[in-house]
Amino acid sequence: MPRSPRLSAISYSFGPGPLTPAVRWLLYANGIVYLVSLFYTRLFEVFGLMPKHVVEDRWIWQVATYMFLHARNPTHILFNMLILWMFGVELERMWRTKFFVKYYFVTGIGAGVISVLVSLLKFAPLRATYDLHPIVGASGALYGLLLAYAYYFPERPILMFLLFPVPAKIFVAILGAIAFIQAVDVNGGVAATTHLAGMLVGYIYLQGGRGGWTAEVKYRYLKWKMNRMRRKFDVYSGGRSEKSGWDRHVH
Image 1 (cartoon, helix red, strand yellow):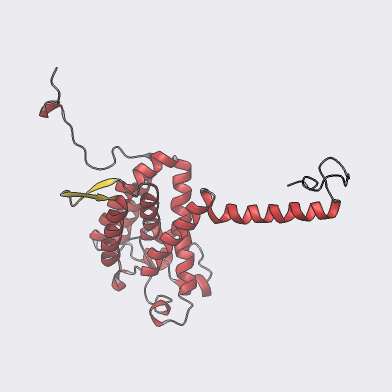
Image 2: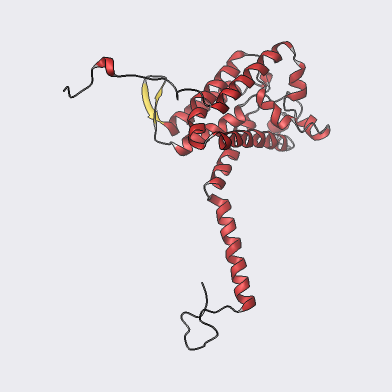
């Protein structure tokens, strides 16, 4: 029996494998909306995220619908959908579809809400997004996926440019930087704050899901409540005997 397999027995694969249900649906939805937007440009005004419309006209649906619109330049949607496929498929397999969909929309909508809030600040570059162009693109949610991938698989080797392997955390950082440079197009209506907000919301959400700061807050609250009850009811172990001091209080 040969010690090493023949070359014909070795197989190579590109990408994460077959599409998962939610990723497939998101690819279809984004593609269909993109084709419609090529012929019906009013979609950008009504469903793109314009903070001014959200604040003044109460068009609150825009914090969600902007994720399915992309700039007319095809490289925007192609690059975004490539990221969705490359990183979303494995995350959906790990999380299952329900959590994946929830995370995708939490990060995307959260990024939209933060974009609206920061546009109200007096800082000129942020204030410019208030009524300059509609914010469009799935990048808010996708940056959340990139953050999640590096969060769970920081050392996983990935072929950079199909030439040399780098850890996932470095690959995602480089890919995120490239996406940031390509996506930040004022004329295309993509806001950098939305990308960064997606990563922030994703990190907070994952921390909450794994315990993190939310678990710490709950623990502190329960500890305070139990201490308060002890003081109120004077709870002792073994009754009110004063004979022992080291074990009298219940901990």
